[in-house]
Amino acid sequence: MNRPVSTEGSRIPTGIEGLDDILGGGVTANRLYLVEGPPGTGKTTFSLQFLLQGARHGEPGLYVTLSETESELRAVAQTHGWSLDGLELFELVPEAGLDPELEQTLLHPSEVELGETVRGVMERLDTLKPKRVVLDSLSELRLLAQNPLRYRRQILALKHFFSSRDCTVLVLDDRTGEPGDLQLHSIAHGVISLDQTPTGFGAERRRLRVIKMRGIKYSGGYHDMSILTGGVCVYPRLIAAEHPGTIPAETLTTGIDGLDALLGGGLVPGTTTLLNGPAGVGKTTAAVRCMVSALEQGERAAFFLFDERLPTLMLRSAALNMDLQPYIDSGHLNIRQIDPAELSPGEFAIAVRNAVERDGARVVVVDSLNAYLQAMPEDRHLTLQMHELLSYLGQQGVLTLMILGQHGLVGDIRSDVDLSYLADTVLLLRFFEADGEVRKAISVVKTRTTDHERTIREFRVDTDGLSIGAPLRGFQSILSGAPTYRGDTAPLMHPEASAHALGEGSDGIGNG
Image 1 (spheres, rainbow, N blue to C red):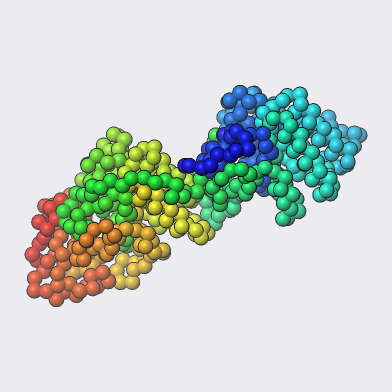
Image 2: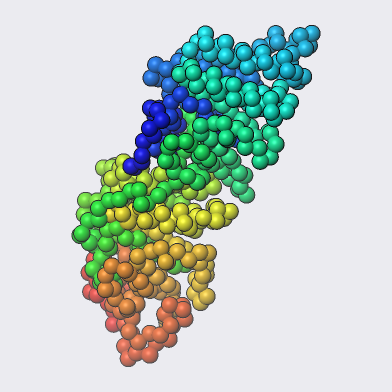
């Protein structure tokens, strides 16, 4: 990612995974930054990571706490497997200071206490000379100040003091001040906002937004975030234009002549294929068949499984003569079971990027979009995120296979959402009835890259895999699920002929 570098000072990494990418390398050193968010959004964890990053590079760190005890901070660090031995933790109001006889408690703010608090911060900093400082939190100073004017003056005094001490400072705020009060925003060199929102089912969604960052071109908007064992992890919003790539010229065969004929020669790298149809019609089987063919041609693949359990997919694929285990063992195939209730769109996008950029996947399968989309109905911009993700994959020359289930089996069949406009190729799979038997049909209704067939072909799924028949001539209304036959001969596939149809195209055609 090419971003202009700040000329105000050197840049230092924050230690927050993903945040440095958003900031184009880190924050400007020796400045004061505001990290704000309601309680529980991860401000303490965020700040400890910032100090530990400096400690790893020999930069002394100081955590000044007005709201939490040292034991509480160490307990937070322990849950992440961190040691704070290299950091200085300073409780500005020690236990002895809470003696009612001293009349200087945070519960009874006074002008004397405010001055002593600020002086305590300054004295500790002059003694330790840290390179990174965290002040937790400003809500206590706001209580002591009693009015906005004194509060602003004290924050300005601290800012000028810090600026002359060659240190980078994070001040934390829990937004307990007056709604719409932007005094801190105007004083701070940069503002990072943390937020979390509950969902109807599953874990809450955490987000981060860089509201302000002087001298730095950053990636604006909301970025998904999570707090894991090991700290805060930010998932930068995917911007496809920032990731140009090259697209291979060769076409990938599906391994089935009839399907290649329908597609106009095969599947083109850098395109998205949508497999659309009702449950049980063979969408996953067709996608796995195309993926296995790419694996046989030496490509690497990533399979993101939302609906089906992984053991079920493995057993079913092996029973259809498409054993996936050898490709997993060789490292050419990575299958990830996804729990959509616990996954944010940003985290999914990063998982796909890692599969492409780190693992070298040239084929990506998403099965299915229904679970992914329905798990986050409150996210109005999910289709825009999907558009960016597919644009990114296309620019990287990745062949993407998406599965979208539809409601109903025959007759009126509908989708929760129409994503066909995002796909370069659309495969339509349908059930239809003929002579008292449920059969399946497949057709290509759209492709942007090849001159595809306009015919509808029958296909069959059995122990030999997927087999494709000849065009269904003489039938009417097959896609509606209630066809009528007006031809002279029956062009349907014989059950016994399907064993010879795998990879043979029209050789699997029956005459009756």
